[in-house]
Image (tube, rainbow, N blue to C red; front, side, top):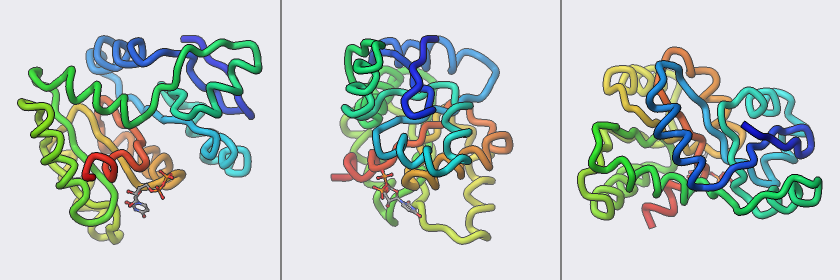
Length: 196
Ligand code: UDP
């Protein structure tokens, strides 16, 4: 897959349709686990100062051009990008496309109540969608163990993690193997927007 390096962060040159296809036809059908990041200018600049974040992004399976600044920079560098692939929109497309399938979601993050509201929103907007669990993003070390165990038990196919940048990327990386979820996406404010 083609990538462009923006301030030393490798970002996929990809459209929304192709990103959806890669996730559904490749990632969800393979037996490997995948980390997806949604890059905007803030994240790229943060990664320039935070080498741990930079390494995580550069080892991610897919880094979509979430922000207009990233698309602009790519075009400027001579790598034309057709469009933004905003994390919020990517999630809506996945919920819609998978609503009649067997694939399930788990929503982790945001203030207490938000992930649950986002679940109700998704179930109303995408009838048939399977959201097997939710948890807010303000947990203690002890609660974190329970969250990890719950996700292991529920075995979602797609895990959305909304803990803000860079916490969500670092959290995903730290728990990546033990969670063993086929597709995990750091989604920032997506659950807040869905909860309204
Ligand atoms: N958040 C969280 N736990 C934290 C910090 C943030 O669940 O310890 C949530 C916050 O409630 C919000 C989301 O992470 O829903 C994204 O936060 P923010 O908008 O600050 O981050 P950004 O998307 O700009 O990285």
